[in-house]
Length: 595
Image (tube, rainbow, N blue to C red; front, side, top):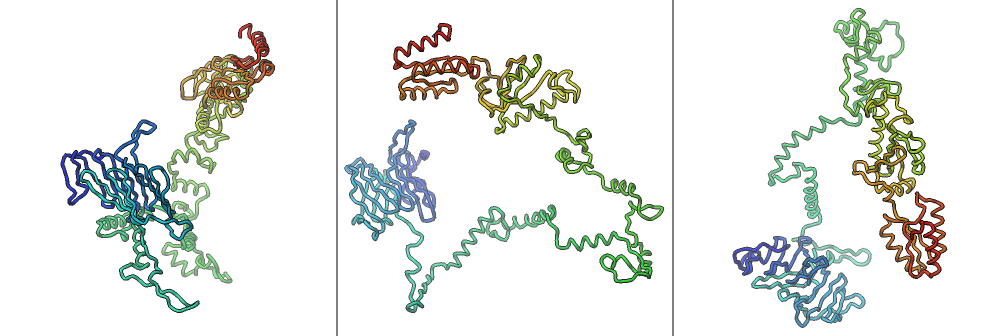
């Protein structure tokens, strides 16, 4: 992108980014990590540097000119491109004597080609490889543009210099590695033979593996904190540790207080046993019992003295007050207990989801919203959907003229079961069908349950369009879901559901075309043209006049989709004269003298 013009001048003294060309445009725009742009005085980008890592960059150099793309726009001319692995190219675009010379860099090696495209030198980075070649003995200087110069010494020493109207900046394009030495370079050997081993010499200035692992763990902890920050993992210097800590005090216990465990805890048996024993009344020993008490008997039976003491304290009765008969001080009967439990535990308000589905789980719960009957014992709200009658595509014409009454309006919903929109449209049609059967639509509709499809004024059926192409070709159905309305056996309406009505008249059917072409290659070319308009016509192919007449006779006998003759006959000028005469007689005799 071109930088905005500035209205002051600058120098290269302290901050290179502040340098401004005499025309007021900024020369450089670089970030502290080294990425950014260098610009020509015209405002076009000369250099683009993108950062790959803390020590690796990618470089792109452009000429101060543009070429026109196929779409009519301007495309910058790239003269050099090198990535962090020194893979790319450099091209001399200085319009000088070496204009067109180039260097190509790959992961295996590099080559230099002159302006004529002849390779002068090629070599591999690995000097020990087979046919490695030899790199240039002296640095190679290439003038990319009048303002850009590239100097190549080796893979690790490549520089580029940008100089334009006082703006100067150098770029280091050489390959950068995190380390250039091996751990084994400074190792010392101890012992000989199989017992020999290498002792690594640690660098006092380098961090150990443990220290680097700790630094890595801290960085990963900071990344994890972005999703689930904890105050103990945050630095106090950031100013957010105290805030997160106060939030944890209020919200860490929320999940425990508001959610229940989906499993039983370890004390559930002891708690259930205590609750059961608390509901069983104690029994006083009579003195006639024998044997040892086990299980609940250990706590149910007590001596007469202990029982009298417990009775005095009122702890011998385990009957709840609302279930106790006040006269007999014992349990109420079954009916009274049911009513008492219903009073103590009233039904809670139910949501619509439960009202619509609770009948699936229990037939003893009455759900408001519907009518209780044999097929709906809970009285839940019932859907109005009624299944549509399915008519085969090949039998639709006989259905609307024979089965349906002469004064009956038949609505045909054309759908495909593998299409989401069709299934949604079918659901709407089933609801309308249910409303018709329940007498909810139409003036003076039938009483609920009195609907008779044979004598009703309206009738809705569906046709599966996946069965055949008969419906699509006869009624020109271009998309689904589609609706056809018949009255008296004739189509009176056709349109997409929710869309505008479309014509379904006979004039919209596809043309039937016969192509007579004796040359096979020309026949293929003409058929390619017909295929481009296949939505408007269908065709048959013939190479001789007898074949064409045979096609015509078969079409007349079959009456396929209501078509008994061709609308258009295309005859090649390569057809012999006697065949032309046969075709002319055959088509004139079958069309009332019109050809």
